[in-house]
Length: 242
Image (cartoon, rainbow, N blue to C red; front, side, top):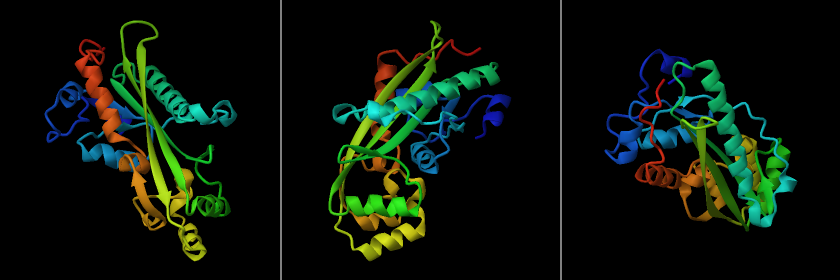
């Protein structure tokens, strides 16, 4: 659903066949916005009956990695996701004040290898370097997610965050296979330079933790957080419509 289409009438971001749980009931009829154009995140949300408006964030994702150290590397994707969510929420409130978002979801996924944050490769050469370094070793996939919803108190919204960490064990892959994979171009638009749900599966021996997190969106952690917010009456969207 486009942002423009959502403004014309009531949002229908929750599918009719979504599970009848307090979270989905609370979100039915609400405007849910994904601050990302990632098709993987859209597909994962769609798999549980959520079809958000798509409004990619304009945040430059230029936080200084040097500010994050070994024990706080998870804060990098969390902070980036928070900036993404705030930028989209504030922009939509300005642009569509008659139909502001009820929930903005933003996420950022990074690969951590030997205490270095890896994002998307710059080019094929950089992609090959990343994968050659990780072959036969283990990396961590960390996704930070930020949720923003309106409240009546200043500044008018509240931010909740969660992160998920998954260990990915790479096979000791022959150079020829690495080179062929890089040539396919599949990994150029992925953090760490590989797509576990595609041809990149040929490079990976095993996974410890949430597989969906490696794809790009930790469904379980996010909906567990939403469940807690509903149960604790923190995600009270009643009466927030303008």
